[in-house]
Image (cartoon, rainbow, N blue to C red; front, side, top):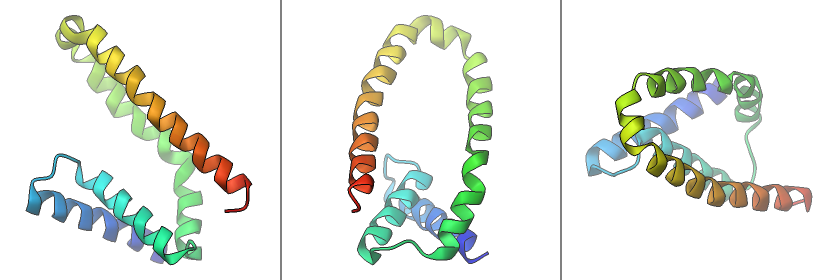
Length: 111
């Protein structure tokens, strides 16, 4: 339960910061960044947070379903800007994949 409260706290904090400063990032992303920073500063992951993360991780694919439905309903937008959106998607995947590879390399090295 404590791990879920930690996640909800950072979600709320990110949402409040986004609203207060009109930041261009969603509150959930800001909350995740703040959580990441706090975990790096702390140097370890609390057991309650690790436990709830392992419980919620298998459910993450369910969050793709609403996005997929939303894309299907935007046929006109996709016809007009589809190639541009595809290019942006391809370009944005590269830094994410590189960052994930770097993190995985660091975790295998025992960091």
